[in-house]
Image 1 (tube, rainbow, N blue to C red):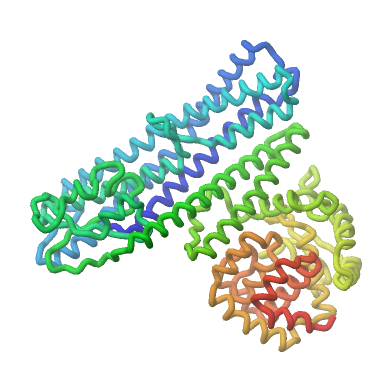
Image 2: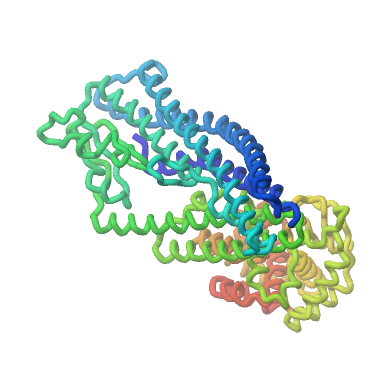
Length: 606
């Protein structure tokens, strides 16, 4: 038997392959559209027949690119489906064979049964064949989406309905928002990763069911028991957790197939079903919970709502990355500006959706499923850039110049324009509270800056050299907000010269006492930081308090926190930075959860 949890998570590796394919294909379409229409008015305003011929030629090149991407993904998918089915088959029979042995029977191991291996191979080939079939339709759909976007751009430009740059933006928007879909003969369509998850989960479930039933035939066992889980779809709720007769000949137990719909797309082991079954003998206890119908219906509706929120987040993450890719690929300044604006708008929407998802889970008690809001290529760097983009979108234009990633100061040769960054930081200081501003201004004017190799971070303060060090060779350097990083390092200097947090027993004791608060509910603080902590100040504090035990957006490892004084120094620098940024919301959250520690910080004399 396979558990509902196993069937829920078994498709994650295959889903990741499909998700990456989705991203790669949309990027290919966007890049081809830009190549096609980003050549100026004289190029796009050509005769219709010439435009059509050249569009079809470009579509042919695009199809070749897409087919290569699909072929590469298919190689990975073939191995993943095979491995997933083998694992599921072994797990299912391992559970069932334990029941047979307890009943005094002696089942043959799976590897010694040619019939069962043949069944597994048949289901593997069917599932892989389904993947190949729908990715073939996906390739054609991508080509048609490209042609449609280019034709729409041409007609809008020719009629003068939109400017050239707006025309191109509309074409890109159509490609990004439509995404990559699988079109079924019924007219229904799904994203390629949704179709993949359904096909692989169903394939795994059916392959396991086929060998389980073959084993039952072999053992001459007629009775089966079906698993149960809270939140089952209503049509499945009525038959879950009960005993059935395979043959239908029992007077005591109902027929297996007609009762559960086994073998149909909507029944047991059908599309996206997470139920399974196992052999059952008279006298055995029923191990499955029997849920109240109202309780099950309520949970089902909550899970459906949660799935909707998760789909929205995944879609917005894809669109956010695709708009960034379009902005990075654009060579025309007007287009780059428009694409960047759309990227920032999507990033701000994503921030709202993440908050709505966290609020929903907290208010309903639903478990957050980080794997269900994950998309390929969305790593910590992408998340940090999106948070910065959302902040730019939500920040009034007059204060926007204060916040820039280091990439904004990257010169043509790849070096860092420190002088311009420092000039902008001087402007930022005018917005800082007076106490913090005086100390920051004094430290800023008295410290030196040096580009140096650093072991574990892109920025650091050296008390021995009295310098702020930065390392432009680190991969994450260009994605860091200079204003936030510089404030943090200057706060270290203020601590070193004036506050001396490491000498405060009061401060150290409060830090030690705070650990139990995080240990009581670590996910609460992880989730808050994921949505709200764009500069990483709180994440670093929580990482210090918990000795690096939990993975926050920013922070250090356990070895760093074990060194005497590091916790005090980093927590001081981060709390000082929150004050400098006038971040009342995060300070209020911190005060509500760590009042003792915040008071100890405020008692430090500097």
